[in-house]
Length: 167
Image (cartoon, rainbow, N blue to C red; front, side):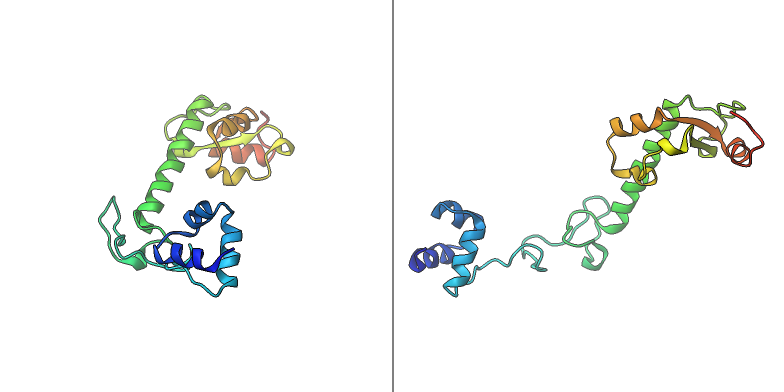
């Protein structure tokens, strides 16, 4: 690959991908020849801690601007708002799952507090190994798992596992 052509493209401030497209090769090959010729891109590679001067940290939800309160390379949502969003989404999915299973204990009919209802697998061997971390699952995947479950209140669930209640 021609050093002069690469120098010209780098001086224009083009990204590695744009240079690769212009030259008609892959970004990996373009990077190889840039380093081989001892050249250096104006931009730093992704993930190197480079902070773009026109893109400051600013949470779109609460307005936080302190960079220490943001995760990794995120700039538009602070850690507190990110956590609040994930918590809310998890609660909504749980309520939706409870509604899907009837919204009441299958043994005693308790339905006063949805937080007191547990999902119980009819067959523990059929339970998905990563059931506890279904946060990233699609709703269709959750529905498949819910077909293996019944809804029990905390008291009936504990009694069943103690062998005092047969379902």
